[in-house]
Length: 536
Image 1 (tube, rainbow, N blue to C red):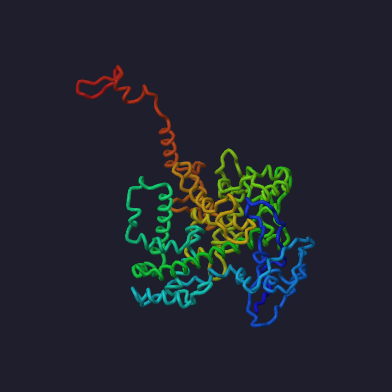
Image 2 (cartoon, one colour):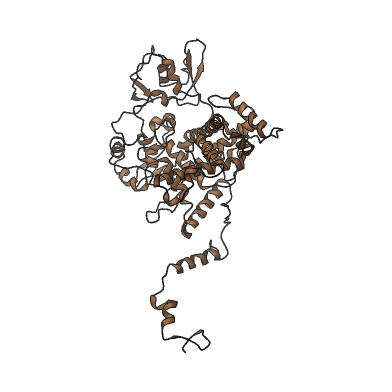
């Protein structure tokens, strides 16, 4: 028989929000099994009866809801008292084998310690070639399981797990590593036959598919270039479908665990990262003081003003401010208001810095976003510390992987995770109604790759802003900005000259002033020597 012991880190209150008939905004919690909102550890009791820990449960006088799903003999309450607020609770459907309900519950470990356990560097090995390949595959088979933990972190398999955790943090949260390994092997000797034809002959759908495969190949090449031993494994994977699938599942498992770790860390601290905001009406929005409302996703999304405000764009703030209750009810119950990835949520901007006439001003400089990035890359304890201060303990992600500069993909990764945490969805999802997380992530990355000088300067300035606040240095890739220049300016003469030439190129000369027109005019006649000379 299975029993649930309450995790001391979990909220003490359980609730499901009011049901709503709307189907457009999927971030609100509706039609959701109560177990999805519970953060309890699942332990085997080897036949003992459930042991309810009531010591820290001040307001709930019934067994935890998730545990009731495991034992249909327990009476399901119609309401749960959450800090003097009664919330309706709906019992799950009857189940002939209630123990199977535990499949939706996962062990709750402290996510902040997981990365510090994989700090070991690769250890030298006498194995090479096929012997190395066989050893890695044997290790993966031996330790196959829910978390696929490799005890020896310095071994070849342990290093694969270590760098798999880095992949979503530098390549995005939506990669399927199984597909990366399969496509990488498929392209190992050049483009497959189906892509060996001129680009113009491809349909739009085929072009998108090819671009996706090339992205997988790019990540596969990154694995070969950066992960110890991986390049030696690739030749021996050829033709071995079972091993290719196993390696892909292994890498994907650890990449997903890393993403889950980052989401959990942000979720635990997100209320701390949000500064109170005063709306035009004078109404102040602050994070809640109640622990359940600060951490339980049932209170997130459109259920609370502080999360709703961050999910909205600045264009929507005025309408939200006029009547928050009515506006949020519209979002829950109708499709009249479109919330998608084409608008920038308020958390992307520094407080009070949004300029409707210059939308990219202070974009990607939100205080909460900065704190969330530091939470993930330089440890949760560093979020409010001076920039560049090293984390205590065995090492943060930046130290483990020697990351010393913020990249656009890191900003986009945190922005995407942060939005997922703000919603009331109990799990990671790439779509939320009309909002497409993949396109949102790519949109932010693309902000830093614009072709014009103005876009390039914005990207350099924004990355310098990030690096000065995360690592204590304004260095951004190959560009560095250290203070102002003499003459009270931040611009170099190279930048000024480039701007002037760009501006001059935009000015098309009148037809009469072109060289062709001058050559045909009376004032421009050929000389006796055959060269052109102008009359005095």
